[in-house]
Length: 80
Image (spheres, rainbow, N blue to C red):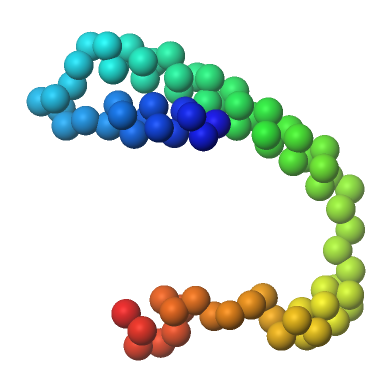
């Protein structure tokens, strides 16, 4: 998947820069990436399909760790 991202960035050109070869490449890799993502979603369904989340345990663990972690700077009021 990672090597497909580089190829996708390479094909992102302005309309006046468009080349036939790159457009053809896009037509080839987009379906492949969609199939790969579909496979990842199927795997995620198998892995997490029967996951049980116990609210009391989740709350206990979050309180023990002090929450989700440090607050990102962009979510602090007045930081932007």
